Image (cartoon, rainbow, N blue to C red; front, side, top):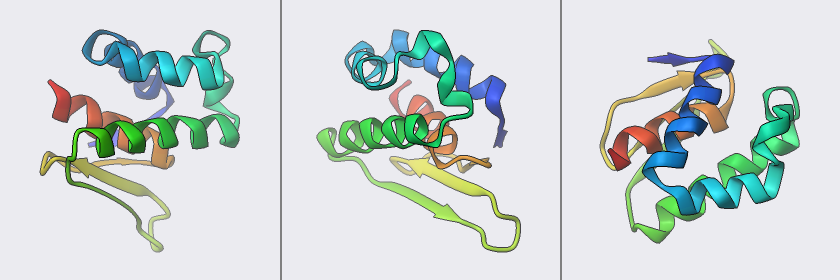
Length: 101
């Protein structure tokens, strides 16, 4: 599945319900309400880092890779479906939300 900016926002909302602790860590790092994460690469780095720590804390398997031809990122968590996006944070968030459900 291909994930865009709209899905990044929706998946952050979903994360708040599925894993409030990780959502709060992301919110503390980037202030989700101001939506700068849609354009600020540092905010997306913080999202990705918080998710990687959450995945590690659950001792889950994860994959994040970039296709050099399409320039897209893909991710799966805990052997789930592959999610693609222009952003590694968006792909990883979608995969994490699927895995935690």
